[in-house]
Image (cartoon, rainbow, N blue to C red):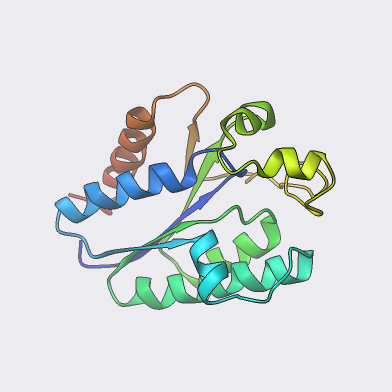
Length: 175
């Protein structure tokens, strides 16, 4: 792959964004692609330290991820983002920034995400210990027309990864 792209994974916490993005990254690397993962938690720790979970700060964080992803993409890298990115408006503004933007909706019902919650974040949010938690007391705006949707409550991880790779082939990003 000569040209870069932004592979933008969005979905609730616990839907499977990080897990699937890591496997997709390995598959792309094995095919000779330059790949970088911008994980929401890691970016927040290193690039957005000090930001809260207010809507304004979340927007700033997602815009920063989008800016870095665009820089990578225009330099021939597949920039994979794995961030909740709950608001359509910001995701759409990043889409407008880069012509090679592929939105991947990692979709799972809230109940499923809560059952998978290894960090205990949903329980803390339900107990009022975490405020403005996406899906509990802050909205998640699902994409209207993502290029790829993985229903992780109905598909295996391998099926979701396969769907993404075959979609990239059909869209002309992979030979």
